[in-house]
Amino acid sequence: MLIRRPSGVRPSQITSETLYLNRRTVLAELLAGGACAAVRAAHGAEQAPPAATLQYTRSTRYSIADAPNTYEEITNYNNFYEFGTDKTDPARHAGSLRTRPWSVTIGGEAEKTGSFDLEDILKPHALEERIYRLRCVEAWSMVIPWIGFPLGDLLKRFNPTSKAKFVEFTSLADPKQMPGLRSDVLPWPYMEGLRIDEAMHPLAFMVVGLYGRELPNQDGAPLRSMAPWKYGFKNGKSIVRIRFTEGQPRTSWNTASPSEYGFYANVNPAVDHPRWSQATERRLGGGFFASRQKTLMFNGYADEVAGLYQGMNLHRYY
Ligand SMILES: Nc1nc2c(c(=O)[nH]1)N[C@H]1C(S)=C(S)[C@@H](COP(=O)(O)O)O[C@H]1N2
Ligand SMILES: [Mo]
Image (spheres, rainbow, N blue to C red):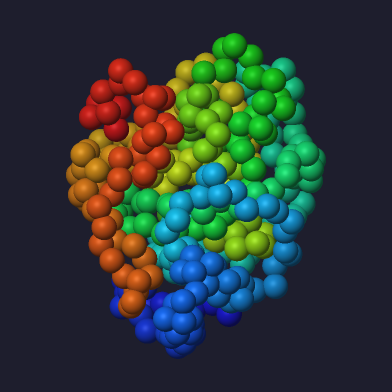
């Protein structure tokens, strides 16, 4: 059951009955001494619609300790402009997306290229759960229990050549399934890109699920990337093409507004977006858990990823 929110209203201002009731239960269990993250995770999973469940192991090594947002929060406050620009549009309109059959085209500077069925893309990969913070450049954040596998493990299977310096990701752009394509708010298809060493970093994740089940359409089914030290927009949803390139790929946000959305887009509290301070963020999920907190350099992953940017001026390469 999806919760519809009037546009312009923040989730923190909503007292939806189910959220409220669930929070009361969570609070009761917390007071009874339950482990915060585990209790909330269990509750989010209970709210999930009957999407296929996935087999996976939990990764503590790559998970943060913050309490995850609820399933309802994660699936009703989305940026997926192919389905509209309101945060609730994807939940309302992404039902029309057909995620099977699905294929992904691999191209560019690699030995193995071509079109691959999703099943063949996924088959060799054991799934794990990683709790990552998603930090949007709009200064909100969520904590999400993603299910997926290391992006680098997938990319290596195609034997990228020594010319492969970047990886470009293209999202589906089908006007029959995606009403948002009628607007020219972004250049379509939605494109993103990473430098090859970023894409190969063990934290870079290919996501296929959420809360133990297949990814809901509004979160980028059937396949979306997740580099958690970067702003949310660096992570393309519903990916249909991956290309290894020698030059830096064009990306939709950078093309639409280069002064606002850099190619690198590393979470950086010291470099403000022209419209939003990046120093703090509002954790979505109102009531008891609501808080504004300091944004961490590289979204908290500085120990792991700072080395990728040694010698780079992060004000210039924002
Ligand atoms: N194809 C596509 N991918 C996209 C977007 C989009 O509009 N289209 N929005 C980006 C932005 S701005 C954010 S913050 C995240 C949001 O992911 P979520 O809805 O799963 O939280 O998706 C990113 N990936
Ligand atoms: Mo975003």
